Image (tube, rainbow, N blue to C red; front, side, top):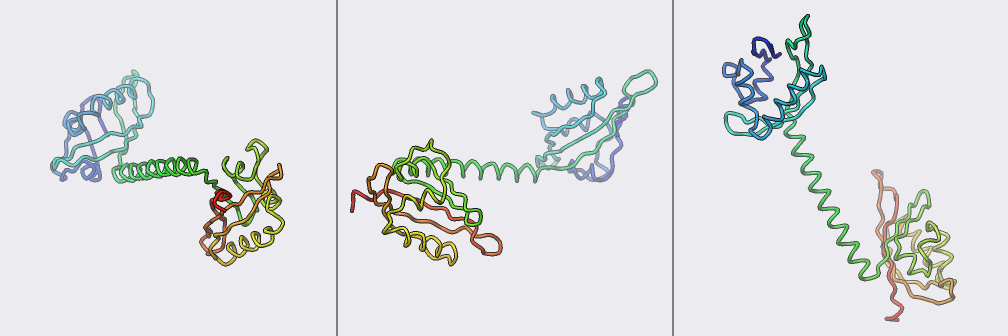
Length: 238
């Protein structure tokens, strides 16, 4: 509770903890509170407080504070201003809480996301350079996803529309179709390794040899949820 006329603060014991002070060390004045704010955040915070007071808008902000021991903590604060009979700001009442751990967690998650994106980009570059197609089959719904290389491996333009399970089976050489479907179903149901080779017949009639591998992704109950795999053309080595 900030008395904007007397320039004094009344805080509960939690506020003492948020700023790293013992109860008898806590600042009773606005200026001493402001001195605890990180140098790089102080000017912005003063501006936001002034805007809240002049516009009758709620305060919602985040800033860093420097504890007496030197630790830096992130504080989230919200507050509202009350006015006297002449419309002058009289006091601001609000609440604050420490969001340092949340900020650290968010930063860690962002770093992991960026690392995953970099890894995905490297994998994408590698698979494109090697002409390796990536596919995914939802075992439950039957939905199939192909990347652009998969379409080319099966002799299709990637503009023909989404891939389907029937597109895959229909492209398989008739002498390999039953075996390839059986191996796929067996992998999905038992977790057996899917590492096989089969022939596909392009719409033009050309026959190509395809190597295929995949892993099974399972749900919390260990039931098969989807398969994610790769295909590449091995015709030239046959």
